Image 1 (spheres, each protein chain N blue to C red):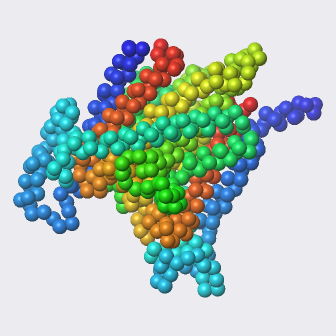
Image 2: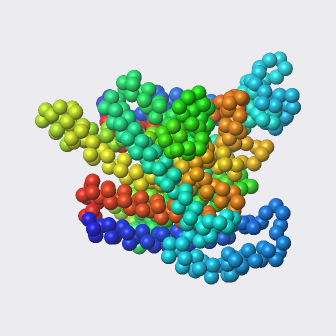
Image 3: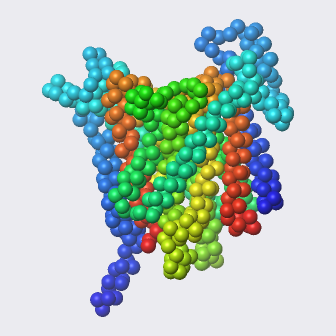
Length: 307
Length: 295
């Protein structure tokens, strides 16, 4: 198990290096810069700004400067916000983003697993057809459409729910953004769960378990659920990544002070320092999550470890 | 005599005919295909029949409610600039469908070629090519979206290609996996013994056998692409005015939801229907083509 973990970690390192390099050069080569505003800056000031951020050096030198800082865990300065570095901004926004994402991940996974299991056990029933319509709706409603609809028709009439801001972080503020963020993932998990449970229920070992005369509940819960969970677990890695990036839209819709909000603001202001820093940070986060999920998968499925 | 002929006819009905018959048995998928065809035809055929175009401005009807009378045919009402929403929704639908088809074609072409080459040659090349795919997987999707906006912004065609180039990655993985098992089969070995070049083996003998999984995955890619495009348009980086897409219309609609709900209801409803149909068709295709589900 430890060897498997080490091997996964070692293969992830070159991926990170190439990805960081690609991000750096793509952003530096994109046209327009943080200091190209509607009213051009006096050349002297622009030159000073460029010198301050080392933008006057050759690209390769900038790159090695950046990598050197990154190796020490420094994501560099923001080009438009002079009071905070990228590290400080991410540290400020991250707790909000993580709390939102974690709730959404938990709720989406649980709701998806429950509804998927239910619809696999009752194929064709009226309740299953209705449920699958709800799930399909969750799948096809984009979050920027679902968000305003919930704000207007659920949040505004309700005396309990708030439709914007973080407030004191209680469920009144969090319920709607978490719902919007988790909808499509709950739907995906549910469809995955339904499909894989149906496959497993048709497998020979389940037929054997049934023919031994075990009750249906024991067949499902003791024999079928664990192998059926494998695709769901392997989807959790990408799902956690999508949830983090999906929170960009949700944070903007609900005015929450997370990393995603900073990211959109930075992208609109062409604040390359902040955009690059956020992207690199997200990348590390997603890679770490994928690694954790792979290890979890290896725990559940011994075949993976010994390959 | 009779039995032999029946058997011959059944064998003559190739796998595709049998898959089509299975698809027709799924009522939801057939209904979805019919509705989608109807919407697509409406998006192409109806706009020339309307007395106004998508960019005609009716100054006295800014944000006007739906109205059908002798004065004019405006079943969806008017948008924030007083343009007819029916014509604009049809245009948005057409643009969204165009983007989906073109981008899917790009994703399929690139993904199949890449995956088949990696899977057929295997070894070092496969390792290197799939590591590159892993890198693309690790990059946050949103970065590509932002870069697309910065670099391609103003050109619709480049936008289609760009979205397609984002979606080929999963296709490449699926195709590679299939190719790995196909290349061990006898008919590929026979082709190799017959002295065919690797290119001929890959494109004449392997890719036709990939059609099942490719069709299934392509059908699932189309709605993803429509969602990506509408997300880009929602952020204001997609199709440029006065042209429009469903995402742009929805973003205008959400700003006016409380007082002028129809500005959101119609484009939002159309997007919902189209995506729902596509998912149902995709499910139907998967059930019809996936051999494991032929129980």
